[in-house]
Image (cartoon, rainbow over all chains, first blue to last red; front, top):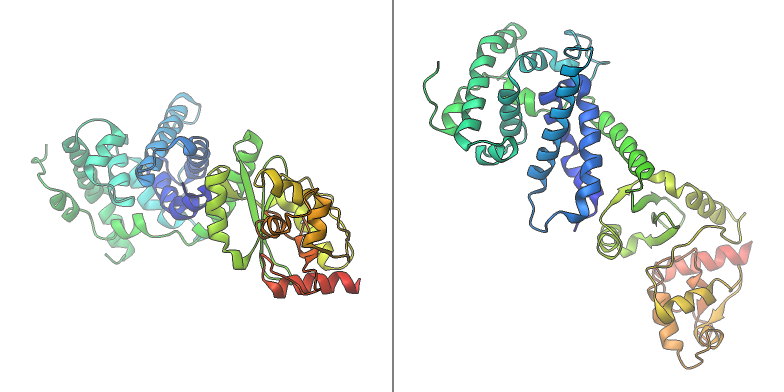
Amino acid sequence: MRPFEQIVTEHGATVLRVCRAVVGPVDADDAWSETFLAALRAYPSLGAGANIQAWLVTIAHRKAIDIIRARARGAVTVAELPDRASPTGNPGAWNAELWEALARLPDRQRQSLAYHFVVGLPYAQVAEVLGGTTDAARRAAADGIASLRRTYAGALESNGAQP
Amino acid sequence: MMNPIATDAAVDAAVPPGVLTRLTAADPADDETLEHLHSALARAAQAEGVLDVAYRILDTPVGPLLLAATERGLVRVAYASQNHDLVLQQLAEQLSPRILNAPQRLDAAAREIDEYFAGIRTSFGLALDFRLATGFRREVLARLTEIGYGHTESYAGVAIAAGHPRAFRAVGSACATNPLPLVVPCHRVVRSDGSLGEYAGGTAAKRALLCLEAAA
């Protein structure tokens, strides 16, 4: 079994991007920390042939659900997303419009998008993380994409972003 | 309601331009953020008691040294020539894979080793975890700690001190596999003819340490 340090080095950046996509830039750091602490705790009992990336995404998924539920329960309905904002300062501010567009998607769609497009998990594995069928995961991603086309693509064009 | 989407390719093709690159691109501040998150993780792991092995790399006059500690104390010191990645892999297998680069736990060790190389420290007061050495080898390491700064002893002499006068070869192999070189001073064990003998960190490092101690 490899030293956990290597797992953090290899997957830390990807997990951070997934957390940003799923819970937004404000709560992403907390989601990341919760994910890796839980992963470290469980690491020695992980099976030898396990797919580390999928395992981390599964943990991150549960932590994100906790955060989303806590928000729903709590006084804060939705954590404030940073405004268009300065290039420095708020984490993820440079992508504020994308985070905003993602935040408006239903949870499943946002999660499917994140796990498939940010991590690169095939839909079969996305389905394992989410529960449900591969088709349902693919459909959720497709619906999310369709939504983004309506809400976010316009913002991109006005930004003059490169494809 | 949309038409059913049949293939991954169809979904991928529908992704608005720029979304993919933005989702997967690194945030300019990511490196700094990750560094900060890593430190916080190490602190949280330590507080929760799940940081089984903490390590750091310390720059010294004999090259970068890997220092690793369990909650009991310093458990491993390794020279660059011993391959730090390999040593960390061995620690993962022999002790626990719950290993993080967490310099804090090694603060005292780093300070004392710095002082040693500055010539202002002649003995170490660190808590040591000898669990990587067993049986006779452990016995030998205990004898090594009795060889004072600036002194040397022969392999045969250590064998006698350990109560096994004929086991000088075993003393040699205990020195070669010393998990705590420098701190447990196997560099002070030399051949009976006065030549240096081998060293985990290479003979150049051994010579450097003995010169340092002779000069002080």
